[in-house]
Structure formats: C-alpha cells, structure tokens
Image (cartoon, rainbow, N blue to C red; front, side, top):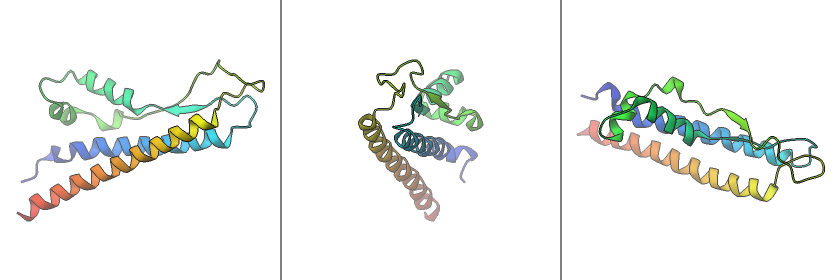
Length: 131
C-alpha cells in the first residue's frame, strides 16, 4: 500500500521545478531589458525559501521526516529586485548580459536535472506497483 506521504519528494521537486522555470523566465526578462534605462535586474531564490521551510519545521532525524512535514502551499519563491541601489552604467541599468546568459544556462541545466528526478521518482513508483 502506498502511504499518503509517498509523493513528498515529488511535491518538493515539483515546487523546485516551478521555481526554476520562473527563474528562467525572470532571467530572460532581464536579458530583454538589457538596454532599458533604470531597469534593475530581478531574480528568484528558491534555495533560501526551501531552507527556511526545513528550518521552520525543526525536524528530528532524517531529511525524509522534514519533507513529510512540509506545507507545500507555503513554499513559493518570490521574484525580488537584485541590488536595487547598484548600477555601474550611466543609464542606471544593472543588467550584465554575460552574467545573465551564464545564469540562464545554469538554470536550464538545473531544470533538466529536476525534471529528470521527478521522472525517476515516478519510474520507481511504477516499478513498485508492478511488483
């Protein structure tokens, strides 16, 4: 019998994949606004949100117990303005297109890893239910 918390890791991976997709969109928007005066780059930081949620739970023992106790509705990675008072350009824009392209490539790889991990979890479920 599959317990109700069997999908705990899938739920966390799903939230992480959503945040990764959102971050790719935000980074693409930064690149599109490279020449927009006064534009400030934006970013998404899911890692800190997830760490805060795990810390809030104050779990005992393994990470498995923390994942089972999480309230997934609370795990949202908001978009924030990165270094709003910083600009190294005359037009006050703080987007460095080279950095953004590296961040975008990195996040695309991260998304691929997350979707592969989700697929692997469902493959394991399928293997178990066939036995």
